[in-house]
Amino acid sequence: MARKPAPKSSSKTTAPTTRKPVGKLPERDAKTVGKLVGLADMVSKRSMGGKEPVIQIPLRTRTNTNWNKKKGILEMGDAKADRPLFDLKTAKQFMQTMLHASTIKDLIEQGKTSSLRGVFYKAKHTVAGTKENTFDTQDESDPILEDLEVSLGALREELHIFASTRGNLVGNITIIDKGDEINARRMGSGGWGIPSIVEPSTLQFGKCDAKFVLHVEKDTVWQRFNEDRFWEEHNCILTHGGGQPPRGCRRLLQRLNQELKLPIICVLDCDPWGHYIYSVIKQGSISLAFESSRLAIPDAKFLGIRSKDYEACDLGDAIKIDLTDNDIKRAKEIAAYPWFAENRHWRKEIELLLKNGFKMEVEAMINKGISYVTEEYVPQRLKAKDWLE
Image 1 (cartoon, one colour):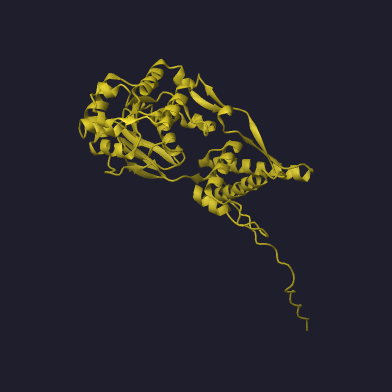
Image 2: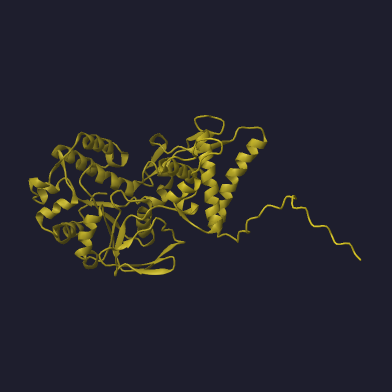
């Protein structure tokens, strides 16, 4: 009788569990994963070659930001900062960068997305054998993700990361959002919430009858325009970005401008902050200069409210808000921006703001009547094409 085979030893090490093979990735995702793998390969090769691992991070600073007058946008320069592993000042940031790179690779390969907050928690843990956390707050995490964006030359959306929804839209357009048809003409009092990822692969434009986009600064002003059905009477799209518009809102505005050829007309507060919001919409921002080509709208227009409106609209003294020292300082800084300094109309606008000594909010127009801004002020300015560029 054949001898029964001896049982396998239970002490033998079993093969490690392998991850389920990833299916073929879409071209854009495959390209992003290739960049992440390239970053890891660079670190590995330097280590195996006896060299210190170093990541180079393009600087997101004013000194490394250039004004491209011909294009009408801000662009990032070539300056970079080294982030070496064997330096106490940068070792933690090096580790954080690689942690986030690993998380992003996992997200892409699994076909999932995550919020900025989610990525922070995914990478947050206590380093073994220490009391040191990889991240303490999200304020540490978000800049590292921006570092990866600019270092890899990949958009945040390409990293499968989204931010909180902020901003709303209503008007004469149909939008296809991940296959769902959104009729923005029938969105009620709340409107459609503008998501942070609005790339063509996710969001497409359907039927559009609108002739322009009216972008207002705050939701309170947007509510007045929506309630008065301004978008319907004047055949437009109405948006707001909750103050300083987030990337998703700015990207959507740019796509509406470039793809559908819709003018972007802004109604913002008459103060340095309203002027700055317009500047960011029009030229881009210093911190996101590497994305200006997909965010900035060089032909955006500033309709109001304007420094001249106190007298032109016969507004009462009750609407005045005195400029603070910080307001004055900020106004002078903005006046020095080349795209304002070289524009005589904008120089005059900021000079009059400082001469007046007070600022005005769009809501101040209610002093003339609950619907004065929607029924008289904006329609008259639109008809006269009375705006700043």
